[in-house]
Image (cartoon, rainbow, N blue to C red; front, side, top):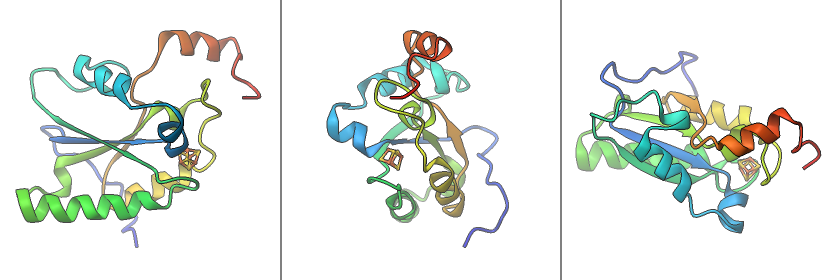
Length: 149
Ligand code: SF4
């Protein structure tokens, strides 16, 4: 069970970003390239990380509604990081990708986002929102053009 304490990243920032993508979006169409590209450019949800420090990027999917495999995947990752690279959880930050956090042409904001966030907390990891944030999609959100998707 979670300790109830909100995990925080190390002061130097994470070494590894784990980006959780919506399973239905990855299955249907998205290879995740634009989010990884935004990470390389430090744009959108990744703008908080300076470019100077190299960081690793790992994309996983939520595993399908309601995203219950997130905890198992994160625990598996943490086990292997500790065993093979001597890295602790403080080296890891999780981002929920924009296809989860915001409505878009893929669909509405994930209705299970709170559940997924609780699983990330239970794994002992900080959880941030957003990956790539498209300017065009932001304009459509402001205009309410995704409502009812
Ligand atoms: S739980 Fe949310 S993120 Fe995962 S497949 Fe369902 S809608 Fe997508």
